[in-house]
Length: 87
Image (cartoon, rainbow, N blue to C red; front, side):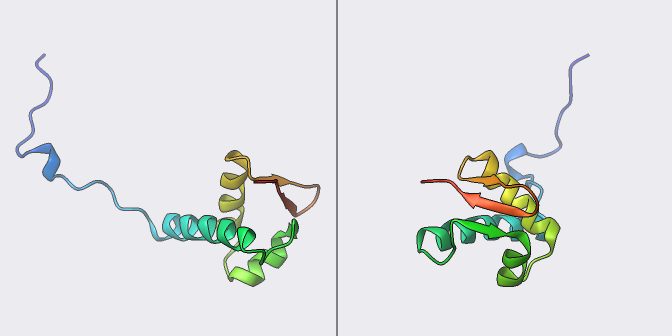
């Protein structure tokens, strides 16, 4: 009943690396924001349009869009459309 003891210093243990999909989603998330602020994207966009533009699968795109919606700078429209909210 004394807990656990590590054989080496905890600061030397590497944290789990992000998967390729997670890093792609992060990059897409930031690219969407940059492109919108630069005026490269309209206020309303479709998932198909974004998939072609960024050449990513729907699941990667959808995860990035859902993250943007959770951060309150995008909202989902009926169907497969999305709208950028005022920043």
